[in-house]
Image 1 (cartoon, rainbow, N blue to C red):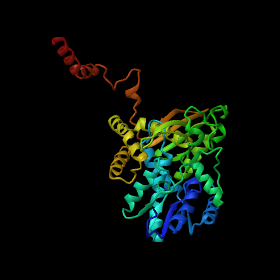
Image 2: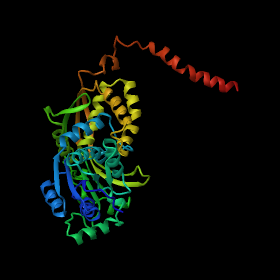
Image 3: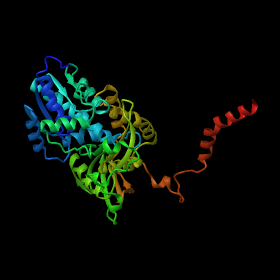
Image 4: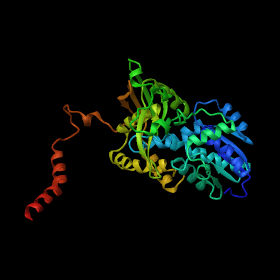
Length: 403
C-alpha cells in the first residue's frame, strides 16, 4: 500500500525499461510529483532525448548532471589504487557508479525538499542494496520507495506490456530483453538470452570492444604514467581522469581487450551471469601493477594484496560510505605513496603485455638483482639466512621421528 505523506520523489532515472515504468507507476500509485535525475557518467547517450522522454512520461522536473570527472576521480581512482576486483574477474563498473548517483540524489532531494528517493533496481539484484545503503548512510531519515518490491509486475515482459499500454517508448524488446548498464568504466549485460550460462553472447551485443579475432594484425605500444598510484598521462600527454579513461577505452577496445563472461555471487545469495566490457580498466590495472612491482615494498604489497578481496567485496555489496570502507581506503592510499612511475605496454589481439616499467622511486636495483659478478651482495650470507628459516622445519621433523 502506498505510504502517505509522499508528495515529491527524486528518481534515479536511466530511461531504461525499469525506470521508465517506475516514473509512471510512482505518479499513479502515490499521486506525487516525480523529479527525474539523470547522471551523466559516460553512458554515451543523447541525454536531452532522455529528458524529453522523462517529461513526456510525467516527470515534473529533470536534472541532468555531468558527473564523469567526479566518477573517475573520486570513485574509480580510489578503487584502482587498491587493484579492486571482485571474484577475480569483475572490475566493479556498476558497483562504483551507484554510490555517486545515490549521493547526488540525496543532495537533489534536499534542494527540492523531496520526501523520498527511488530507484529502478530489482528485488533480486545488488543495485538495490548499493542504492539504499548509500541513501541511509547519507540521510538516515529519507524515505525510500522501491517499485520492484511494491508493484504487481512479476517480470520484465510484464513491464514491456505496461510500457506499451502507456505509450512509453522502449529500446528493449521481448526478443532481446537483456539489460545493459554503461558508464565510462564499463558496459555490462545481463538477463534475457544471457541467463543460460552455456549460451555464447552474440557478437553484435558488444558496444566498445571488438572481438580479438577482428582486432588489428599489428600491435600497438602505449605508456601510462602514475603518480601516487593514479594514472596522470597517456603516451606522454597529461589528461584529466575522465579523458584518460575514455582514451584508454578507445585504444584497448579497438585491440580486443576487456571482455569478461562470468557467473558471480550476488550479495542476496543468487548466482548471476554477467558479461562485461572494461577495456580501459583492464589495461589500467595491468599497468598499475607493473609500476607497483618496482616501487612497493614487498611486505606492504603482500599485506595490501591480502585485503583486496575484502575491499572489493565492500564495493560490490554497497558499503562505499561505511566506516570500514573509510578505514580500508586509508590503508590502500597509504600503500600508494611511493607508486610513481611509467609502465610500457604492448596491446595485441586481446592481450596486454607489460614490456617495460621505470620510476625515479624504484626499489629495483640492478646491482642487487644481477646474475653477473657483483660486489654488493655476499652469496655466503644466504647460508645463515636459510639455516635460521629452516630451524622450525627441522625441529618439526625431529619431533615426528621421536614419536
